[in-house]
View 1: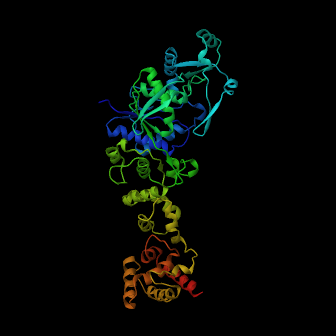
View 2 (view 1 turned 60 degrees about the vertical axis):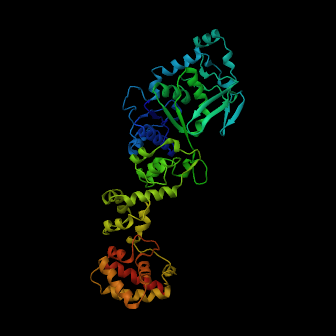
View 3 (view 1 turned 180 degrees about the vertical axis):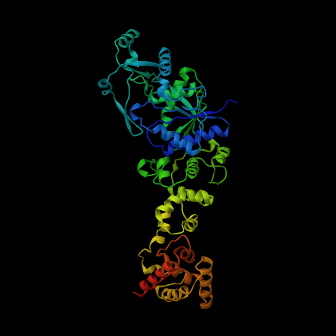
Amino acid sequence: MEKIRTRYAPSPTGKMHVGNLRTALYEFLIAKHEGGDFMLRIEDTDQERFVEGAIDIINRTLEKTGLYHDEGPDKDGGYGPYVQSERVKTGIYMKYAKELIDKGEAYYCFCDKERLATLKTEVVEGKEISIYDKHCLSLSKEEVEANLAAGKPFVIRQNIPNEGTTTFSDELYGDITVDNAELDDMVLIKSDGYPTYNFANVVDDHTMNITHVVRGNEYISSSPKYQRLYDAFGWKSPVYIHLPLITDETHKKLSKRSGHSSFEDLIEQGFLTEAIVNFIALLGWSPEDNREIFSLDELIKEFDYHRISKSPAVFDIVKLKWMNGEYIKAMDEDKFFELAGPYLDKYLKPGLDKLKIGRMVKTRIEIFPDIEELVDFFNDLPEYDPEMYVHKKMKTTKETSLPVLKDMLEILRAQDDWSNDALYARLLEYVTEHEYKNGYVMWPLRTAVSGKQMTPAGATEIMEVLGKEESLRRIKAGIELLEK
């Protein structure tokens, strides 16, 4: 069997979009599932869109996510250079473009901007594009040579017949046939001598022996042109796998405005790399069972690209937060405090037991910035509405809470052992003595010491961290609030 070779071929134009990371992940998983090679190739032929530092972002993201490449700009496997601008210097693209010219599959085009502006246009996928009329295809060999000798600017265009059809095959969509009349004579070599993205893709994938090409299904409309290039050269085309669109919760294409469209955005928002990779793997792919939590090694073992869906994948931020929370819960304590430490330091004032508070929040947060809202009351008792003492299930009201807090104030003033266990035992004595349910006492007490409806722990755990003096002060403030 032919060894599987996949490539991730990003353009260095900025942050790593979620869709690009999914493409890289699927390319990686397809190769590694079959013991194949995963290559990194930088496609920087569009110099106008090049962003300084973007290549560093690509390398950093792949390293952080564990998507290590077997070949690339830093690992020559015999198919280099792995940066397209460097490949341009070898003359490879012009060589193959001229081969197509000799075969009648491409031609020189000398039309200037003024003439091109007069061509009719069509709207394709929301963009207005001009349809070239094959004007320069009729130039004689002598005219072409004269123009070249005169240094007249040119591009090289693909020559697609106006009649007939072109068929290509996709692993998910099957055979797709289009009328050639719908295909434009796309530019292969631009006037600056650089290849277009589409042409460089085909040449590089063939010369680098790529067997499987994974890309978004927005490229399906370009695939017949790719197929015609493979056929024109007499090359075997790779296995095509076109991935479903990723949408936001409103089923619109995921955009930068969503606030979580890139890997960097998600990291800045406090998501774990492992959770991001796990979540993105499920954006369009599902295992045979309903399992949702996977390590990268487990994904390699389980990934079957035939189970990729054709339906759009919804980027559900709520699900990602849940998944991230599951990773935090499963994290060992040392790792948790390594990552949570900066947040605890930022959100808690000195003197508080950050270790105890950290243990409280570990199972209650989904992302690390959640820590702030869960712990801020430890610093200072917030202003709160006395209606918080009302809880139907606990059968507490403002009227029932007031005598309970007054009793607690006296009992706890006499309490010397301020550990959680001792405090809890003393409160249980009170509950038993008065034949109350636990919540009848614990709810107003927790409300008084926290001033919040949601806390990371119960009343006695909170009081242990606050200490006796501060706990009593807060209980007294609760009594005063209710008396008003």
